Length: 133
Image (cartoon, rainbow, N blue to C red; front, side):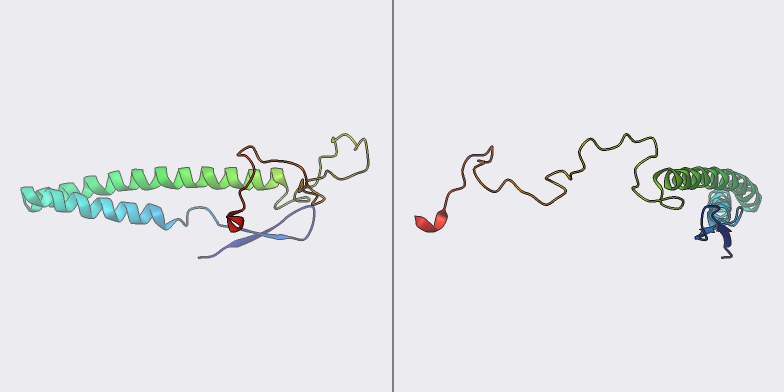
């Protein structure tokens, strides 16, 4: 499958973009519809097989187009989400420029790795020491 390479404007990171109209899903569903229609139409004879194949081809093509459109919409949504959170453009996880400055220049206890190891009892109650029994 051929892929286009699109350059991001903010830096030189290459983003692979699948070109439109190369989805094998559309062709596969059309073929599956034709085969299924011909098989069902064969019950009525050779004319039924031809009519069923044509009808199945049309239905399979419509189903393939719908699936292709849904896949394209999901891909566009994922690309927009990646841009919004900074995966493909910008800095991943960086604070927004509109973010207010920190009031105190300290890290939170959880992010600094400090744990409450002493003095706190879990809500389930104290842990029993099974070795002392």
